[in-house]
Length: 145
Image (tube, rainbow, N blue to C red; front, top):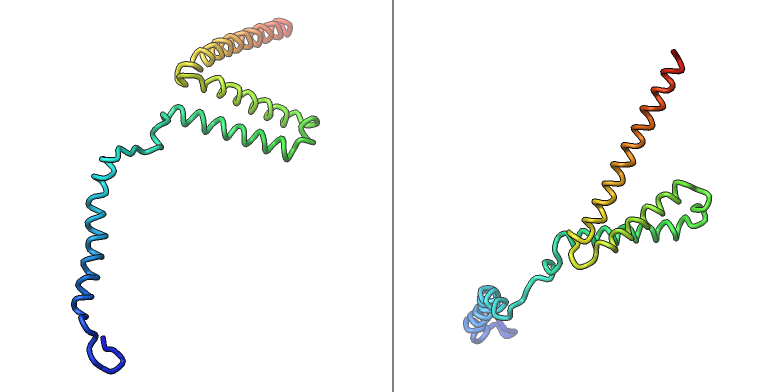
């Protein structure tokens, strides 16, 4: 490095050394001490404040609500004429209602009774449907003979 009159830049080596030391201190010193500063400040990650089942319920509820809002916004005119859209809207509303029920104190246990009752009713429904099918099939077979 030279100045305008062709002489070497004064104190060039000292300026280079100071620059090197400042860069080394800012990168190495701060990088090595940062974990200790974080521990000393007792910082926690915010992602782990909510348990995985609670996150699942929140995500499912938001997705169902976003889907319901989309259907209401874009296809509100079609819903009264389309039974499939009515069924989808009813399912989403039902899902939101269930997920709102689950958001009580403990998401693993508050919805458990709700689900168990639903499973019992569904099994009873399926048994009755099977019984009706079998009995109607037997009647048809007897009439054919």
